[in-house]
Length: 141
Image (cartoon, rainbow, N blue to C red):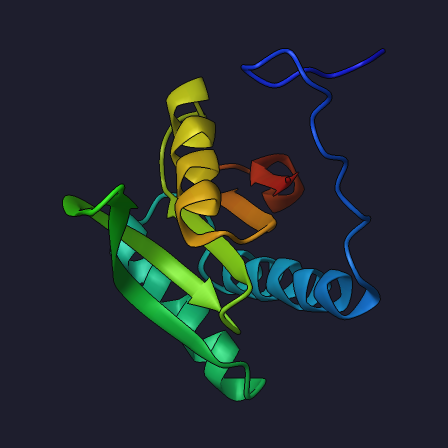
């Protein structure tokens, strides 16, 4: 099936995720498992974020938390009041949640952040689940 862009031409295909990026993704998932195994479900997002940051620090993984995003449109710089929960190694966007269930709007948020930052890999992690594997969504563009 041919994918077309808005001008009716073939959209560019993306290369697969590199091994290094995939390994970083596995570290991120393991951090989520460690936090969930220790803290369990039922806490607020800011607690999970603080614990997740501890896991990243313990692994010497570079990150920025609550990173403000802006968007350039033509010659205008737009401040959209967007904040990433975590940008890891300046390569992977991580959005943390503590909600009853993930909604399409949460995934749309992650996709927006990936596009704005020009990153290809992102994780949406909901800690308010009995099994953390059911709360992790991986998105590669």
